[in-house]
Length: 372
Image (cartoon, rainbow, N blue to C red):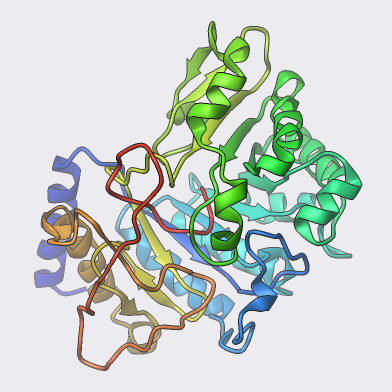
């Protein structure tokens, strides 16, 4: 790194720290493939399913993480698709853990039905520190209907083993009116287990667009239905849970765990957004509201990753001045694919008007996909 780059890095880190926002972390979408087929996701219905998965290599992830560590980044999250389908997932987790340092936080979102030969023990040994499990019903038949396969009993065994190993565990449960009681049953796992269950609103994107008119349930309705749980509940800090996304986590009296909401449809916010999103092919996206995407592979090949992070930090600092801040949404919302053609030499692409959201009066919606 040159003296000029060092000064630039120092200035950028100081400026970012002065904003009071959380330091950025890396949010990797490792693949678009999944061996399940959730009704609100349905990856296999996409015409280019898997066709563009020319994914980054372990060495690529190591290079991205090594430079990130020099910028003080200490967290990475892996999602998909189903990230555990990658044959090199253990090596990827290890590369991220090594690159970000011994105090790194490395997480993953999975449906918990691990492929043969892969264990939570092996992921933990490679550096995984927390696990998010997608679980939408405890009933095997109803769960299979929602998720297109899998077994919630296997997912529960994965959760139990992760807790035994000392990993922090969160559960992601999508709210649907047909399966609302199933979601409440999942939430009740937090009575006995030291986990955070996040009840997630449907969004008007992808296959969920068709479900939305009949299946959407707003956070406000769920809070009313569960008011006896929450009326005397205490709040668990996001720092304690290892969560940096917006939202409150409430712990009813006597419960071992907590319940939170991710309400991207009724009342979304990205006031403290701090993810550097990285697609399977290595396109880094510092903000969904103004397009400052950057391809990382050329920088990895040329040894100029410091320049890439300079771009990313500058983009995040300039985010608050984005003219699209009120009422626009980035067109390529789905991080599992790199569908949008990006003209060479055009750093900022046009933005399209965001569809109006339902209820709450909030003007912004966060991106689809994983929740850290």
